[in-house]
Length: 432
Ligand SMILES: Cc1cc2nc3c(=O)[nH]c(=O)nc-3n(C[C@H](O)[C@H](O)[C@H](O)COP(=O)(O)OP(=O)(O)OC[C@H]3O[C@@H](n4cnc5c(N)ncnc54)[C@H](O)[C@@H]3O)c2cc1C
Image (cartoon, rainbow, N blue to C red; front, side, top):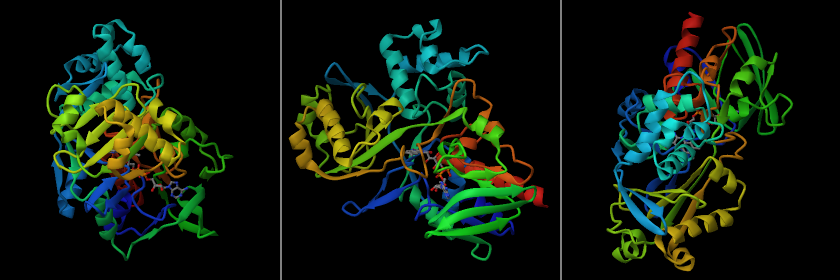
């Protein structure tokens, strides 16, 4: 969308081919009719102040608000208050900056002397953080890439996190509405299967409403998620390139599609704000202002409230290996896993929790054929992969999307917006 906007605003005609029946991709905002507020099934937060996102928000007249960072952790059956900071875990993550030239997995880093200076509990917490925040398998994610991410994104606990008042979907809608209709066309329900190309000429084969269609152009910007770009040409869901671009796929294999299972639960009331619940959870103080809850080892290890909004909604999050453990479960099974975790956190019976529950939202991202994962991470030795993937092929194929961002914002909406706009800039330069 960012690329299409830039191209059409610079006088170039553009067709945007989208497999789904909606725009937004991994931005997927639905509206809760009861509370009349957005529910984010995909991207939710703006991490810090990326200019790319904030500039669009200003233009679109959309508001965002920051969230507090009041955290609790389930430890030996009780909720322990962590406050806003977690200095022990900080120590573990800070050690990444001292790594030598050799890359290693985050699991291997946790066994180095530098990391072992921290307590085992802090290392476990850091592992949970990488699984949750990076949606990564600690045995595969590159420690050097994590060190760079810490610098680029800033520490999430130091950097303010924001939510959009109307949800990310409102930004997508505004972007779509602001495309110049004389030059840009969005074709929904159009599943691309093949991209035939030679220098300065592209033919895209797609199936639209069961019919094969062909779209021709001077060049193409390809923003497919990494899990799709990695598929071998023979795979059924692959997008084939003719001629093939095997070197590109080799670089794509150095990234991994991170795994997330996210669920949003709306209750009749914000039961965790009840002082009796805080007492039962042995939290030591009231949970009225709580934002994050961490429950290591339970099916959904991370939870958050909608603070600063006071609404009876809790979001459940599992990333990396915990997400793979939940992936493919039915809605009922996922709900049971969420209820079990809440029972352990708040010591409220599953029956009572179910009686308080009014709505359960989730979306399966790992097996979603057009996403194949949540967001990318760099595997060991793959530090240069994003830069390699961002290189145009013969001035004709240009790649963009969160995985291909090279400005330190990969994996995020800001990274996707920025890489799309940049790819379009390169196209405009190469055409003039
Ligand atoms: C659960 C979850 C939570 C997240 N939370 C955050 C967050 O809080 N903050 C944040 O910044 N980021 C978050 N992200 C990441 C963020 O959503 C993504 O980085 C970003 O939206 C990716 O944008 P993109 O344009 O690169 O890819 P996409 O949005 O996936 O766009 C690619 C498009 O290609 C389409 N497509 C796929 N295959 C085909 C085909 N064969 N033919 C035609 N079209 C096809 C897809 O339908 C999709 O619309 C989250 C992601 C998930 C899944």
